[in-house]
Length: 299
View 1 (cartoon, one colour):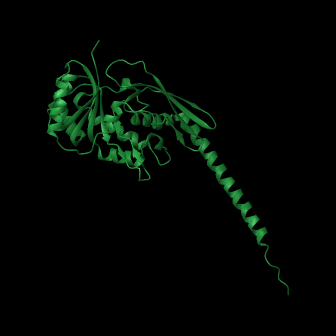
View 2 (cartoon, helix red, strand yellow):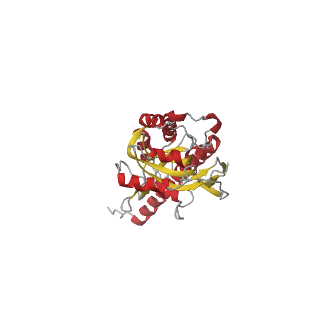
């Protein structure tokens, strides 16, 4: 009895066709799922909640005002306008666009441009750096040489991290009830040898969330660190594995770890009188103060 040899070329072509059809069906199902998710996201403003807020976290040297989203079949664009955080008024308004495509990939403005002095100061804060009395004296001498009524923007770096409760006690000791304070929940990290080459510092205040109505969030004086941390944890809880945060040099694991730990490594202050800021330098909890901008109070 004669037996025919299998037609391997025909078998290979058939198998290839099956793989192509299966891949096409899989891609089509993913596209349909993504379209449904995208339009659901557009309806509940999740793009603004996740990526609009992420942009604010990643750009702590700017005021990014609440934006608006324009959705289409292929992509959604969330547009925000920002001005630099500085001691005096500024007319330097820039457009900030975040685009999310059909497959969930996100594009946002690159950080290749020169960074501001405030951004550099924030990303220079170290975790648990300890006390440096010589540095304190040097910084104190610089601040003392300036008019103490100047309005200032700067970064207060702690010698050791503080919990929200410790920070409330710190505020009470120093009678801090000024507004214009943000909290550094995670320091920056750079390692070009790893798969995650860099991470921005995580800076937060209670007005950071894109969906927050500022009028509904009154300042709570010295107890402000407690609700600020609660709001940060609430926002991190909205994130899921499908959110593309790499464009902001933020990572879900980094944010989740910072939220769980809940400690503060420093403060970003703005609009304070220089004399009030100078008083913090004498505290044993403060390592240094990095001034990034000063201006006369013309108000």
